[in-house]
Amino acid sequence: MARTLRTINGVGSQMTVSKGAAMSPGRWRISARLYRWITVAALVALAVIVVTGAAVRLTGSGLGCTDWPTCEDGQFFAELDNVHAMVEFLNRLFTGVVSVAVMLAVLGSLLRLPRRRDLTWLSLGLVAGVVAQIVWGGFTVWSELRPEMVMGHYLISAVLLANAAVLVQRAASGGKPVGPAVPHRVLIMSRCMVALAVVVIVTGTVVTNTGPHAGDENAVRFAFDITSVARVHAVAMLVFAAIGIATLYLAYRSTSSTSRAGASLRRRGGLLAIVVVAQAAIGYIQFFTGVPAGLVALHVFGSVLTLLAVMGVHLAMVERPALEPRGSAPAGVHP
Image (cartoon, rainbow, N blue to C red; front, side, top):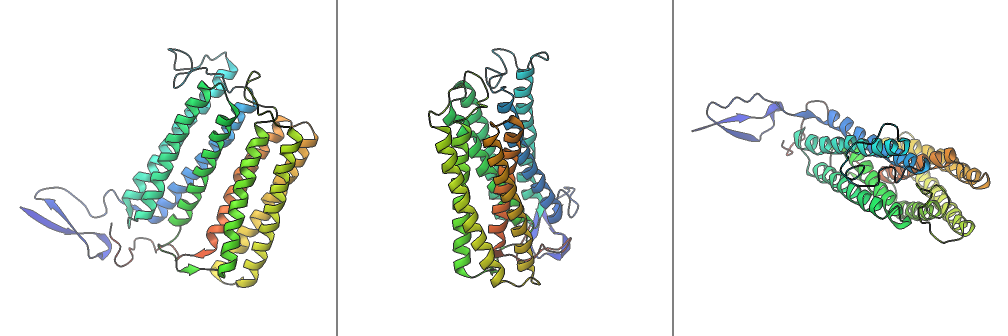
């Protein structure tokens, strides 16, 4: 025999449980605001591992552990007195932190009140990306840091960061979009800006895998002329910056600074401008100073910030409802 319990907050959906089962309203549920912070934590973890991965390469520790998933043949942990092995091994351990963070994002999407299918699919995308990253990392080690493999490792990270940025944006909103916050032509330019950002990232990884800091002194590099590929990357950056400026100018003109969408665009646009200028400056300085490892690390960190800033501006082009009030569930949306 079954008895019926109504869910919390007066939502009209019903749940059926067997007689005698103990269940309290709202048990094993989390608020939309808590879930938003879970997604932010996942995004931060994904950004940090990009920087720690760069540290592995910049310290020449890419083959500190010569096997995968173990560090050495038959040995899981790295030797404490082997600096390169410890650097690589600690980066692998942090992958575990990232894995936990994205799994919590999936679990949180299922426990979130109200539950939303788009958040679940986006969080599952993070899991798929992390699995792909782990597998690709294994092949990268087995290939002895082939440049195309190292390049692919970073590009998977970029896709993961973009996915996480969308997830955070969706988790911070109340559901389906209200509509474009800008005219259609501005939205098209925003998409072009994102596409050009992808070109900048790809050409940047080509430069990185042509120059020094391969992760190991014996690792193969691309046989391109470093000056030529650096120029291609610089031109891509300038075109991206020009399109970005034009996009932000038209977006500002078409929105009011007092509106929620207009204020968000101005805030995110200002952040994007600062990050791009700083990233370009670091790129030029590192090129003319012999590509010191410290500046390369800053440049990698800047690439993460640039990607997130671009995604932030692009996502702000579409207006979404504010996050539902604490403890409430929109009509027609059930846990």
